[in-house]
Image 1: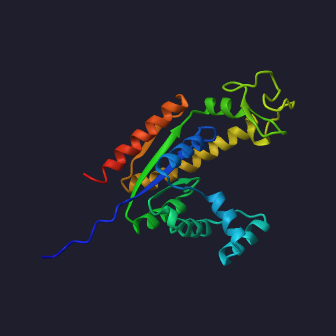
Image 2: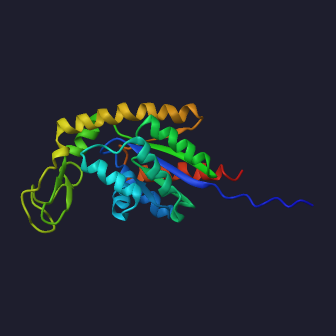
Image 3: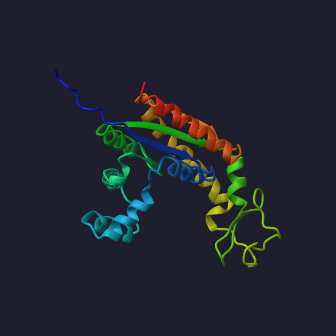
Length: 233
């Protein structure tokens, strides 16, 4: 009698998309905490690789020192190496990757080489709400507390609740003209990336990010649980 080898459990691979101000970062933390998987950010990978002093890290450091963006090929190499780490064996969440068609296709190749269940979720927030959320942010330069004059204002206008520092500041990239540019760049960049996955038969789940934070979270978990159950019919 031939004994079949045990079936290796599929890795839970999650891609979380969301425009600036959609609350993607908050939801990413909730997901990684619930499933005990790492959040993979290309920014973090780049910093870690440079700090490691590896040959690839030195290459990236030279690119950054020259004031250039890290090219797709190098980013893909960094991501592939990171996903090969031990802490990714049960799953991972990709944040800020893929950003381009080249990166999306490279990721497909990486995931094809591992037993993997890919779930793609976009937290959707429209332009007007994006502007409202981001331009309403205020930062305490003294203690780092973050407020929003619309959804989470300080008790006294322009004064930090925690340390009493005033005035609260507005980050340069939170100004309306910058937010508009960031939003449109996101829209222009993600549509082609979506098509790469859709053409491969992947579904992009969409969640209304204008709902209360806990509702958005519950809907994301519902999607992930449903998709996870599909691995074991």
